[in-house]
Amino acid sequence: MTVDLGALRRNAARLVDVLDGAALWAVVKADGYGHGAVECGRAALEAGATALCAATVAEALELRSALPEPRIIVLGPAVGEAAAAREARLELTVPDGRLPEGVPLHLKLDTGMGRWGLSELDTPGRDVVGVMSHLASADCDADFTERQIERFRARTAPYTHLTRHLANSAGALRFPGARFDAARCGIALYGLSPFGEDPARDGLEPVLRWESELAQVKRLRRGDSTGYGRRFVAQRDTWIGIVPVGYADGFRRDLTGTQVRVAGERRPVVGTISMDGLAVELDHELPAGTPVTLVGDGLLLEEHARVADTITYELACGIGGRPARGQRLTRA
View 1 (tube, one colour):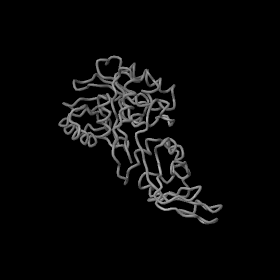
View 2: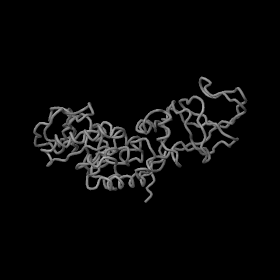
View 3: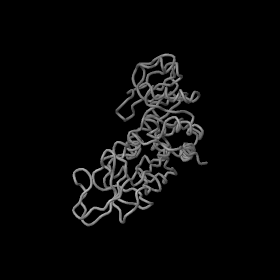
View 4: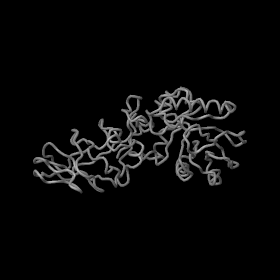
């Protein structure tokens, strides 16, 4: 696996430009969506982000140990960990009426997500520095998103002296009214489309590259099969290549039927994906060691997500159970 920090910096710069004066807060929870939280957070800050966002105090403390200066906002409920947050100079999100003292707070208003958040805003206390909400369907329901934006605008109108933040990646890219004072962008930072489309449509570059090789190549005779359950049975003599990547590495079992690049050519993944390996149908014999690209060279994680009937977020977070990341490139 290779994480291209140059691409991440360009994505961050693109988001800064799109936000048109609103601050970019880089979301690096879940180990930077599987890309590496500390390295990606540092690169985002270098490209213009003004704060980092984590899901838990534990994630934030890991960031703080490597990055002593930037603002770090904990997005998940963590009021019970106020002492640790105070010591590490973290900022906490408040989803209910409990307001710890001595730590910067962001009051979370529920405008339609139906998850964490207050139904109404009380008068903010002295430690409150921001008011926030979260968009439920900015990737798929424009009408409801606009209603959420207007609810947030109306309910926070008395608090314009505080930092108001609502937009996620989808909101930042497609809903100018959602930008307010800051936007919390995650998936777009990594060059993945929040809409499941080609990220280039929004001027984004994929950051992750995932490569392997053919560990073995064999010829199946007609009637022979490969993999558990004999899900692929050769209808004619067929060359297959075995790639030493499986669902333990994040290449999920429901990705049968997707494509990878073998020696630069797209080839289908066939049979049942096992814990440690997958099979690729070849159109001719190739030597062991032939390079295989799982993500990269125009092969998008969004394509794999459509095959697995899921979202890129889930695939990205699941990659990396065992493979060692390669060098993190820093192309200008």
